[in-house]
Amino acid sequence: MLIGAYIARPSPLHRVPAGAKLILLAVACAALLAVRTPAGVGASVLAVVVLYAFGRLRPGEAWTQVRPLRWFVLVILVVQLLITDWVTAVSLTSRIVLAVALAGLVTLTTRTSELMAAIERGLSPLRRFGVDPARVSLVMSLAIRSVPVVAGIAQRVRDAQRARGQERSIRAFAVPLVVGVLRYADTLGEALHARGMDD
Image 1 (tube, rainbow, N blue to C red):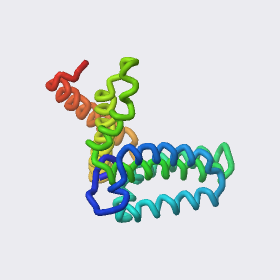
Image 2 (cartoon, helix red, strand yellow):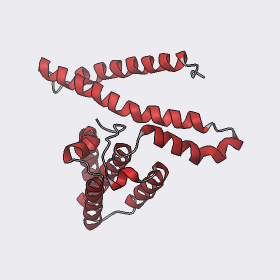
Image 3 (cartoon, rainbow, N blue to C red):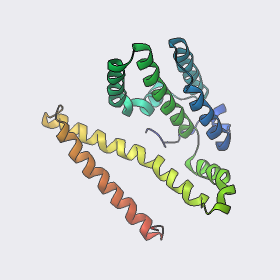
């Protein structure tokens, strides 16, 4: 699942226009930058939980949005604990998770085509400066769609590690992951080239 996997549900969030969601996402992420206290983090977590409830999304569907971050967040948390206090460390890592959860909420409740159309409309004034809104929205769409693909590759590599008893080997994880991602990139590049979009 993860980011980019739209789930059709009859919820209030699903009916909100894509453009409005993107604007609110930007505002919410900016607001998260101001969160510094445990009380603020708690209130932010509660707000995100309520939003997922409004979207009629299950806990498991919410978890898949942030699950790939768990090791990254753990490393960041440990580093922050070494150089700052625990309040700052928890605040920073929580804000990262919440921002990803909010982005996941937008993509779970909005079709990719609607997001692309909203981005094109938002960037249309930049045409006069040589920006092609259609290409920008295509790149962003590909980025969104690539996240679950890369996460899937990572999961398959991790499963293969466990089967071989090499769970603790960083090399056994990193090398197949890089090879898999590069193969996916080659396939994607060939598809774009076939459609005349390789410039």
